Length: 224
Image (cartoon, rainbow, N blue to C red; front, side, top):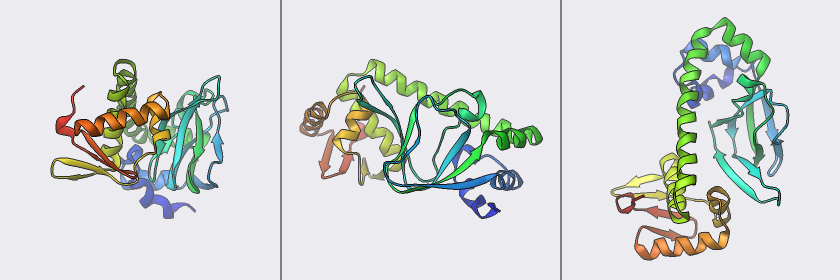
């Protein structure tokens, strides 16, 4: 029934190393959920029983502290995936997922996925390789959050966005429709006022330029 989404799965990094017949097998256990803007998809502590793939829209994965302040762990766009740990460890959700705009998600339930892996071990091996790389990226993010100052964290965050969705023009990376100052603050563990000061400082140093929500980065001038 969901064979029509096989082409979408080919663009999902989690499944990029799989063969055509393996992609077809996964497409047959999918179903689609739609979410409106700001709708909570799941909350920290909820039972985790599914993997989600963004077919359309964008989803933020975030945490809240005791005072309700938000920390954005990641923003997942088209062809991105989240909730994959629930397919393996059967533990409660470790973060919150919220639709940032009207979004359509492909959903794979754990019981269907585990049955598929039992019958197709090659799929399991390919997916484990991708998950291992994702964990390495997470480790690197923890490292720069722990050891860089605020200015460094903001630069790293913008470089991550640039690597994912920016356009390289000569020696520059241009991010169209970049993050708001509040989004930067939530992702870098600081206040919006601090982001404003740090961005102004970076502009003065010639490291970045900002026009509305367009960021232009000069990677050659960055040092950490």
